[in-house]
Image 1 (cartoon, helix red, strand yellow):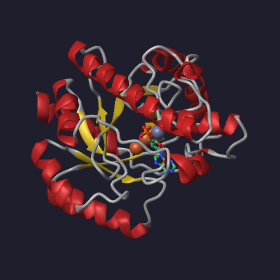
Image 2 (cartoon, protein in one colour):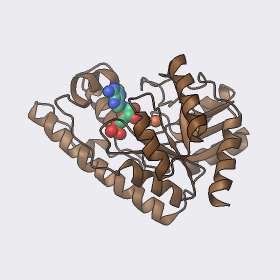
Image 3 (cartoon, helix red, strand yellow):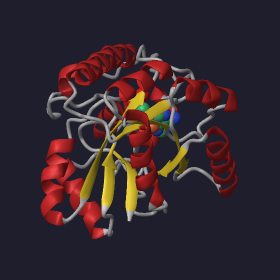
Image 4 (cartoon, protein in one colour):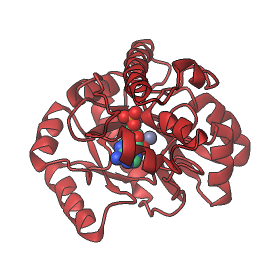
Amino acid sequence: MLDLHTHTTYSDGTLEPRALVQAARELGITHMAIADHDSTGGLDEAREAAGPAGMNIIPAVEINTRDSVAVHILGYFLDDKDAAFQESLSKHRGLRNDRARQILEKLSRMGIKISLSDFGDRPDRAALGRPHIADKLKEKGIVFSRQEAFDKYLANGRPAYSDYDGPSPREAIRMILEAGGVPVIAHPGYAVSTELLENLAAEGLAGIEVYYPTHNAEQVRNFLETAKRMDLVVTGGSDYHGPGSGHERLGEIEVPERALEDLLERRRRLFG
Ligand code: AMP
Ligand code: ZN
Ligand code: FE
Ligand code: FE
């Protein structure tokens, strides 16, 4: 069984890589991609835990872009030791910290006091995101869930929202290609237009995440057709973020086994 989209504490997942590997193994997952936002820091720990458990970890990343809709670009089978790639990710995490500061300032003006140092217990090379701020709001008893924190404060258009000055989708695709990875558009059901997909394909986008928890049967059909028409690899995943995250469907998304071989085949086609 396959899951090509999961998160750990190296971004906004609630499980450490080791615990995620354990949970996946118990559900019968044999191949799992760890695709943390703007970080590959969890891969080594996951690989260490996966070997003895007879599981395979696929190196991946999910790069959040500054596009107005939630354009997230996944990268598969990239070289996570590539120095230039790591430097770019580190820069993006810096921009995330700047954004978090802006959000915390807005919250502070609303009488909610959280400081950046409250997030200091996360691992090195971990990316800070709005879900972490949501968790603090929960800890303080201001909201009951991450979702409520987004609905009341953090989502686009809500009072503590602040823009992310991150990379463009095209820069994200470039970065992944330069690290030897296969760029795939994440959860295209979140308002990604055909026009955008066509533009991204011209920039080197090579795959589309067709199987995803919020995609209905009609969306799946449409995205399969788009994949065929635009020669994109079909992938899928649960976007599992761990217990308490609200994204908890590990092992529930059926991803065709051939997705792995197709990604590897595309990688060979791209890089020889
Ligand atoms: P950030 O990386 O800080 O922009 O946060 C993005 C993450 O927050 C996404 O990957 C989702 O997991 C979550 N998220 C974004 N928008 C919403 C929303 N409207 N409701 C719930 N979760 C959201
Ligand atoms: Zn996330
Ligand atoms: Fe995403
Ligand atoms: Fe994700």
